[in-house]
Image 1: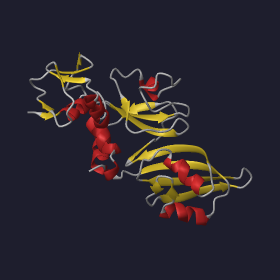
Image 2: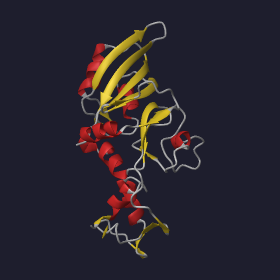
Image 3: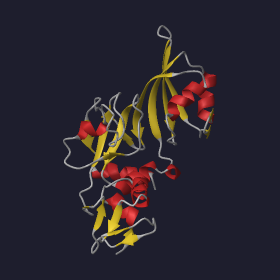
Image 4: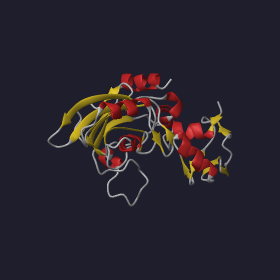
Length: 241
């Protein structure tokens, strides 16, 4: 049965669906030797040979899902040759090419999923699904209830108003002039949590993502990883439905 080319590439773990669309539009994908640049193009995985940069792809690899506790200082990409440390370096023992599901900036720690399943990645990261992501933030200053209420309602950033967030004050260290706050958001803008706290006057000193939907870090230490169970993968897909 014919399927859209970008979906086939994503299912094969070549890239996420969005990245697969870029590959097609840039003329790097061919079907039976013919370069294809139309995003609506289809191919039959049973009878067609699909190549990327001239190399045939395996259309049905085993799907792999990894949960990583990302340490600070690692970039969430597998393409930056100039980055000294990439998250894929931490899962190099997995005998499959993996890519991150979404991103954490270089200074942010915590839960990051890597996979070779582009359809899964597309579902989990698409904004319309509004999967909750929980972070623990240590911020400079003794945060007050007014600031927490503003964050909960949504704050204006340079790219628009944020959606309402859920917040819980974990504690205030008056001697260190720091506060610890749990915040849950359903968006995924660049450095969003850091920018939200800065907008109310409390810069982030440390940020750790602890949950994506129903999945948490558990007892994983920074740099450690484990495979997600089929039930966990199913739970994530349900949360994205």
